[in-house]
Length: 512
Image 1 (tube, rainbow, N blue to C red):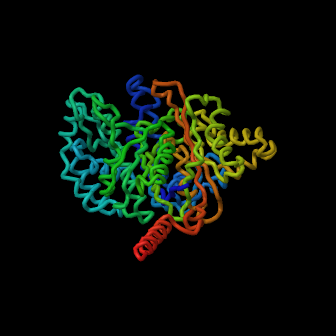
Image 2: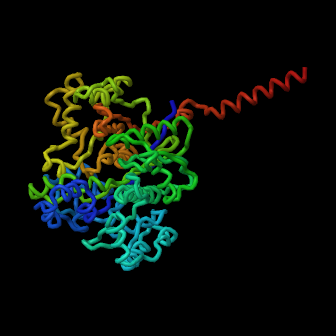
Image 3: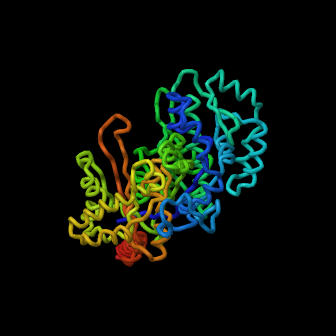
């Protein structure tokens, strides 16, 4: 059976405090229903600075400067802990400041919908010129800005969406249609943010892994946004829009949606496309969701916690043909939450975890690491959702006990050895397994682990089309070398030998 491999992954965080205040749905809803609320007045005093965001251990883990196991060396919560060796640039990606990101949003705007003031444009141009991954060609798209009076007019008279930086109005997004609700300035701003965050993540993937962008021939985009107009809401295509600005000149692509489970679905699709030979190199990428900024802000402030949902998150990975070296996606070890599975915790874990293991005569303990919903407990605990990864590991361990794969007394050890603390920001799709993919590749290549399972889950009922739950999983394992090499002769060599034999046979006949 042919497999595909993971060639590299990237992770980017964007500090977005002003977007949190003005664009996160918790805050925009509060402004509509209770504009004079104490929450809105207190909110600016509970936001973190850029330096605090960079100094936050889960964020350093996310971009690859610290390993997941280091989280256990610090007592929770982590937001008040100081750590050493912090950088805004990491092994897997970077933490980008809001000002630079707003400039990037303008750069990826191809319909001149984003209007920035002259002063802000010139300021951010200097910073983007110094960014190692944003080319001179991209920066050249930052044309001369407009005056603040024009920005204010678009907002007040034409339904524009305001853009702020450090509490100051510095621009806006225009609506693209007078009556199309899918092309309002609010929706377009959300989509441009998703696109821009995915572009910078794709650029990091290419740079950090020394990838030739011209060799990528397909892109799967897996965020939780959707672009379209009144005739095809959510029709897409984010993937090609991202590929255009990431320099993927030979790529086509499409969007995959599955709520929080979309990245896991995309890994399965990408690895299958490559294994089938349809494409050689497939990029899976997802940008951030501005709507989810500050989603649990009210609970955080009540508990005396900074509003930790202050970053947009991006993720990207490259799935390629088997090179005999990099870890392989085992497409024969895919777990599926089917229509008939049911929604009980045991049914879900059985379908996603144990069913694919049973098909391959493996025990739960044969998987070295499980990457589940890697939500950061600093964020979820104050909001009343508990420690999400630990809850998942307890369910997997309990099922292991029921199956006889481990003893009840071994549950704590199982959680410690096969699980991890969560570190991903609550951006919905991002935490679903994929934050560990970069580390898993390294761990397998270093010989520290042999197999890792990535589990994505989704709440399909949020769309009001079905009450069904969703989920899918796939195993990443050590590359045992190309099968054709292990079996002695490649298909190409066999064809050559057959052709040579037929030639000799024909020559013999002619001689007779």
